[in-house]
Length: 216
Image 1 (cartoon, rainbow, N blue to C red):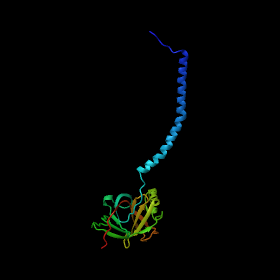
Image 2: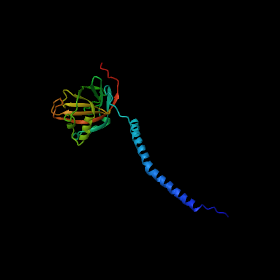
Image 3: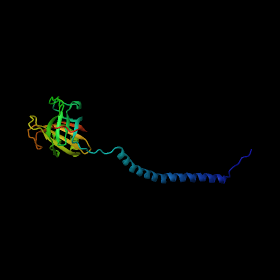
Image 4: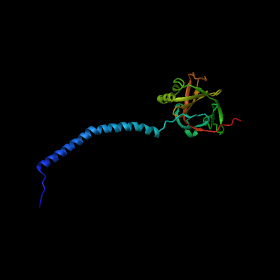
């Protein structure tokens, strides 16, 4: 039987070569890899926002004129009234291009006629902390402040001759959300400076385009 032995020097050189190769590999991993990771991280940081933007486009406020408004969610109810709404029982509204507000199926006033009834013509107003935030009676101050700050347009309507001095705010948000506030001017003053105003309900609404109601 014949055995081939590597010379001792060759073994030493081979071992030394392996050691050198390992050292080179370590140096490559320690020195080159961080740069690669940094480059990859920067590239990913540039790509991810684009992907998120494509997958979650920012909603835009749409025109809510000539829209039917149904209650999607009750964002607020004043705590000191016994009667409460649930979305399926809340009134349905229509807001027309001439800024008239119509209502039907109002359980509060026991109007079950299924006929659209004009509440009046709304006017553009500007929301402030005094005429909006201060009209609520819960600890949700941040919610009401956010709605006001993110608001795009607000229309206001005082129901003339109503014994309860009912008023409405219709609010179009910058992100496309629509809110309807229903409240009272308890001091009987039908203006934005009224000191006795309260909001009884704040509805988050669905807004769907409609055919214009015939005025004949």
